[in-house]
Image (cartoon, rainbow, N blue to C red; front, side):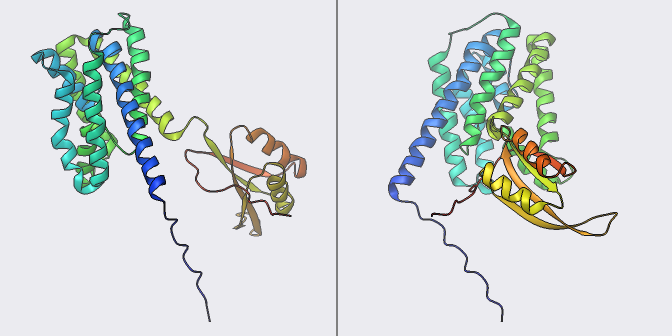
Length: 296
């Protein structure tokens, strides 16, 4: 007879823990929105450099109509955010509306406070600041750009075009419009800003301290595994593998370390087996525990 392990029950959070999580989320969403507003109002908008998506459309509409940028960002985003209600859930939509509302307030607070007239400085620092703020908002399960939500929905329906391709297609029209409105040099600066911001967003979402997953093939897998757990305080997993040429069964040792531990790990492995085969890959997010040391 086979016995299945009982599924662990999820840990129930106390009301205090839930309240602290919501307060932290509100703080980070507000902070992210104000950081985005700094990038827009103090660097990009005064120099006629635009962002992509709904914010870019709002910036051009504000320039043409002289209407308030914050109100335009909020109003243009409404139909796109509501479209995401079915796929992304009520919680995401509520948090998104809150973040967009905070951005609308922040753009009004910071309006007219230009930081620099140098186009290169405005492009680089505007992109960095914008990307950091957007990344902070995305990390807290919200968004400022309705075009991303539209792209997700269309990609699911069309099935032949990826989300990234749809976003690129939409932004292409936006930057062509910016070229006609502000001049082609401003359109090129805008594309540079978008690129910088996207790289910063990736860094914020993935974390600055990327981990490395390591696969080690060696005859001394037990010695290597014990040394890693003892000296690096990192858990390891053993997996059975089959050699392609030798057709012999081998043991693969798998672990995840941070980038600062990587050099020590290599030195440790090669001190035990100089012929050990190592494969490393970037890991963008790690959850769980390291080694649980036994109590003596």
